Length: 164
Image (tube, rainbow, N blue to C red):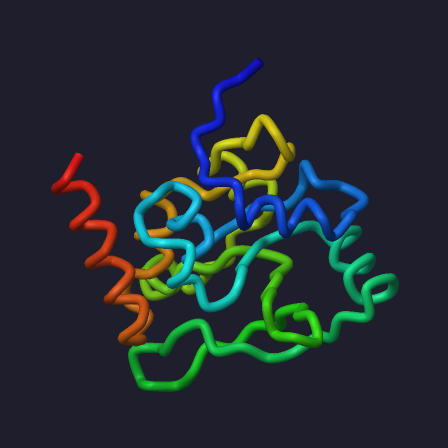
């Protein structure tokens, strides 16, 4: 049996959704940081994830979740960068069809990271089969967003690594 590196509380909530393809879901952002022990689970506002169209279709058609617009950062000229998320009625989850790095967007014009590519920056939970984005990926995704809450997460990551 594999050793579990993660806290497991958020992963358990995702597993309870009954997704048709757990192995194609990647926990990102604050949820990933909580599972790695960088921040307390209690600090996670919502559970962010990236997954494939099949899981998103299940969330919308079977679970009754809705598509909503979310701001993920700001361009150098101050314009908002928006993406579509799928969210549950309680606002507990925000699930995206791809990851996004404003840092990469500022340099290349494309900040999208597809699920298959994001898995390469993640570790798999042996209990649920779900993926958890690595801390270095979350730090990169939080760079240059122009959002104060992302700078706080980057500070938490820096503090975590100083303690290691």
